[in-house]
Image 1 (cartoon, helix red, strand yellow):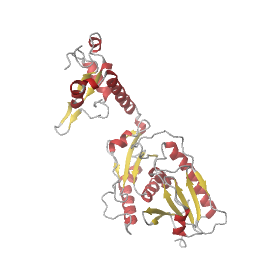
Image 2 (tube, helix red, strand yellow):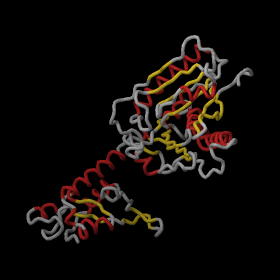
Image 3 (cartoon, helix red, strand yellow):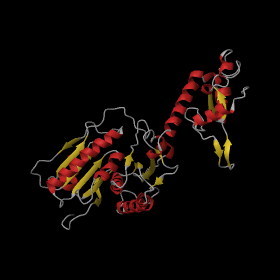
Image 4 (cartoon, helix red, strand yellow):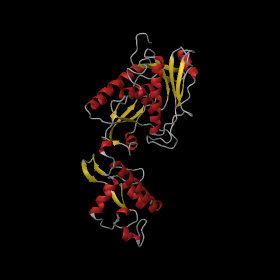
Length: 382
């Protein structure tokens, strides 16, 4: 137990630097207020010494303990559990160097997050739908942690377009019509009106869903408000950008000039897609265009520059398809890509300019199946 009376200005400073949260690595629990006890202004943390204020205390030193007893750089805020671990139960395992590192990491994160200007506030849009038999649940805490330093949440609540616990599954006939209709209605109710009223000036999108629905979400977003799309990584499991690889370079391939069959666009970024799988759906004479990367995989999108490069590539290809085939052609889209790129596929597509698209989805043991069409079709298209 501390023997030192710490001046109030030092106490206020350490509570401010910690953001009122436990500084033990991985904890971050809020120590200000308790909703259950209806005590909004209560403080439920402890000001702990890294080097004890007594030579006989944890990490104490005959010379340094008196000198550091009220030193701001020797103090940290801890919850009850971690205070006991650090000073009693596992005091020998918690060295001065370890605790200083925890303090530095925590306070640097608080300084970064609170230092973001108000103009960089962004409303968080979460979209999740059933993928096969799994529910795509998006953690708010993980999402908020992925936004700094470029953005910070405009509010503590998210805008949720989650369509979970659906009785209809993606291999049933009415699934796509129901899910698309639900998404469109939810977007109109929760997003579009607020954008029109200028309540929302920027969106940060975190989405996990079947690819046709992600493309539809992108179509709804289009360019109605500045938007940042995020990618969920599998290794490591996080929404934070990794920047551990060179930016992606997207490769475009085109069919022979004389191809006369249906027009297909294959986007093979998360997996290879053999042309035979498309031929089985549309026929051997299909004119197949494609966008891919050198080594497709689920985790290839690692940084926002990858999304930018994809948008540039896809926008140019949409324009090329428009020029080559004209507005009377239906484009058949076969997607195999990370979720963020699926959203961007819809955002880049321009209504009344680019070709109408029939979007396909891959069903295990069946192959690609048609879902729905985006864009206006002439009477002679099917």
